Length: 527
Image (cartoon, rainbow, N blue to C red; front, side):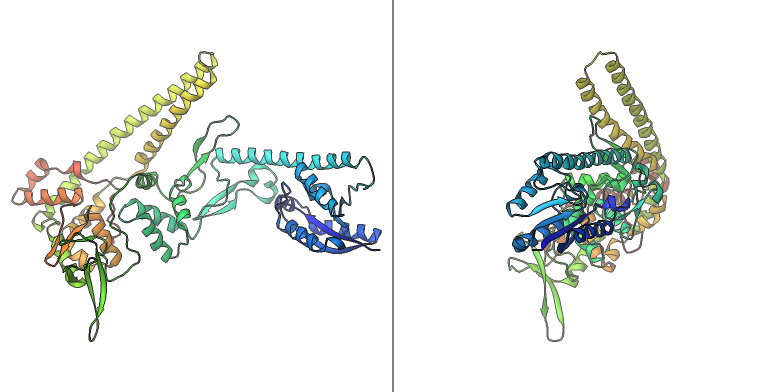
């Protein structure tokens, strides 16, 4: 009677890279079966770790056995470590097959089924495999920790980056050769856009995600949120606690995609709340103001719809509660434009504002230098406190637990100070390049609104107003205006008739000038 066998070949990805061969295993097992006149009924080739039996090809093998258990006599592999590197799970699997009358064995480490010492030898072979797996795991963890402490990202490349080996093929058997360097790919510009647009805090994060997805960035909601919270994009690596070493954040070797100031703005948005308008369920180009308006009559939500006329369609904003508020989209946008006339700088004082803003440059730079000096002193003080704590620990003046508690708190504060120093050191606060074009925009808000497309109309509304507009058949009104615009408008009206020299000296607006984080960059003029 023929002996029917199944061949199981396995090699992990790392072993494959080191020259192990599934083909060699198969040839060796075929010769073994030929010498013993075994009939091979199936062969399974696995490229997976042996730390457990959750393996694709092994699952197929088990399914085959369950269907054909009466026709399968043996399961063969080259060595026991090809079968498993987990002693406990291996014995359970062997027991299951033995209960079905199926023998499990290794051609190169053969165990005679009737040998009383089989259990001892089997334990020995399986233990060697598990010990080796644990050594490999330990070396891998050590290597990963070392790589992270030196600024390498040791996981799968995040969105916007590709992973490239930092080392040649000959080096890959050692720690340095396994390290991967992150390199920006074709999706990197989506990451930069996402952070900058979310940091503007004009629309909801989900609205930004959907718009970027329409442009070609394919990220689900959870992945998008995870991306916006990942320090890797500012060139930082989070090193977790390992072998009693405290967790820390180090500078990465890869190129950052955004700056720390923008990253912090995004984190503040996650932790805070601000009105951005009720987000529309879908994008309708006819009604950019649909979720920014509330009904003057009943206080209900204003929506929009299109009516079919005799020869063409007509777009209207109207109240959801079916009251009398109903205005054509074209007329509504004109009403909005009229409202913006009161929120723009008078042309007569435009030059005065230009000089005021440029005059504030020296004050901004002076404040920056002063802040930077204070932070550097604080940084030195915190480092000195850590050194003092280390000396106290060496002199047995404090217990290790007390030392860890002290230094953990100091290190957290030191990390924040280092971030602030980095932001101030790299930030360019020069506003001169924005002054002329920015003032021109503020002097023509009504025209800018009418000439803008759907997205830019929404950006304008979200930037200028911090609450809903009260909308009726006779027009729009609001008292919730962005504080910067409010100050500029109010002061602008007060400046009319004042001499040029007095304006700069007596009415300096330096304290009200927004920093470089205020971006008019997405307006249609390109500023």
